[in-house]
Amino acid sequence: MTRRVLFGGIGQESCSFVPGVVGFDGFTILEGEDILAPEHQSGREVDGVAQGAAAECIELIPTVLAESSPGPPVADAVYEFVRSRILQAARDNAGAIDGVMLLLHGAMSTQSLDDAEGDLVTAVRQAVGPDVPIVASLDLHCHFTQRMLDGLDALAAFHTHPHIDFHDAGVRAMRLLAHILQGRVRPAVAHRKVRMITSPETHNTRTGPHSEVMARAVEMEQETGVLATAVFSTVPWLDVPNLGWSMVVVTDGDRELAQKRADELATMAWERRKRYVTHKVPLAAAMRQVLADDRRPYILADCADSVSGGALGDGNDLLRYLIETGYSETAIMTVTDPEAVAACFAAGVGGEVQTSVGGKLTPGFYSPVPVRGRARLLSDGRYVGQRPPGHVCIGRTAVLQVGGISLLLSERGAMTIDAEAFRHVGLDPRRAKIVQAKSTTGFRATYEAYAADMIELALPGPCDSNLATVPYRRITRPLWPVDPELDAPW
Image 1 (tube, one colour):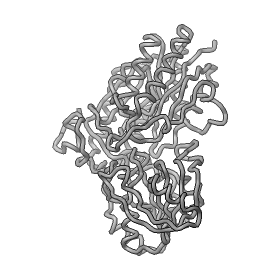
Image 2 (spheres, helix red, strand yellow):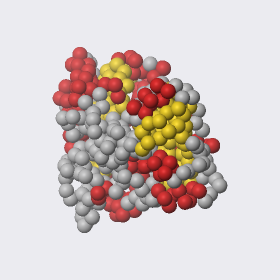
Image 3 (spheres, rainbow, N blue to C red):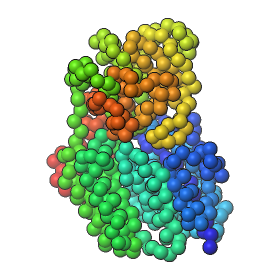
Image 4 (cartoon, one colour):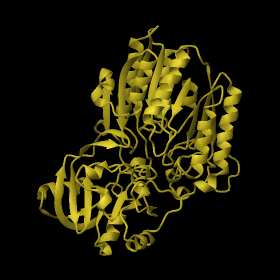
């Protein structure tokens, strides 16, 4: 018997501390069969879902899949477009749907909604009724909410950071839904919200406290009766009520066991909370280390301007320091600045450019720095990323050569979780003395194989890891470490 599963979703991680909204031009939106077209397969959750469905003889009914890089909240019109397409497909297939699969990031806000995914899950549940199982695939940084819990029958979450299990998460989500449809399991879900937030620099699942918590979560999934576990360490730059870590466990009909395991994970995280505090290196101290060492490359992480965390990428503190101190070695770095890109295009390849760079998109954190250089290369900013896999467009792009500094200027923020933004314009990170990564933990999976060292810089920005000083206005208090005296996890 072939079962039919409605399939769609939306993915974006929002940052409350950068201006603007993400509109249609910031999303890649696929509809209908285009979602499953071979040319769009890239090793992400959608491919895992398709593989899982084929293995279980499930027919997918694709609706719409919208994906965007992290950034400001999403325009209401974009969310409503996706929501209406999924709900219309549910109405059009009323009575002929056996299940629903949603691919969601889990940390998206819009102009009007703090919990867009919770709203979507609720709407889909109302459309298909109480008896049609709904399963979601979610990012490790999901801001899990009660509305999600109420609407979902089960879920599968990423188990890695840096994220390398996109495909696996899709397979696990689809397999779980298939087993529900086949009557092999009866999911019971338990949730424990923990009153703590932590910066993603310490969410590395390969080492440190997070590796210990995640290892236990994965181990739990091998227990009889445990179907799925999720450790949602949550993006901390959402200024919304009820922010905090979440532990979710799905069992086969045993809610008491699910709650027991969720509480165990929550306790583990809380007991390690002080180990999740991030310690950064002042820029001057980092540069002394770099200049005293003949090895290369040094990866200098500007985590507070993390484009993969939602920042706009116009931070320029490292650039300013290198220029003002007369740095003469090689460096490659990125700054988002449409005006500077336009100046390079006006000058043409080989043309001299005198302009100011950075500090124009988030002026509350940065200010422009004057530069003079030569336009080395111009590009349309289109390339294929590796982490996450897929087609990327950062708008018109220019390489401005300022002494030994190869400055990648782009109209949109360039994620440097991988090195493809540099490589697509001919910049080789292995050959530079300094490589700037505007990322928290994600960059490590790319650079750890050949970096001389990787240093996280103590710089300001909208994704600052010093969470006690982040200008929250709407979070539910008390919340550690904003309230460091808090002594109870829930």
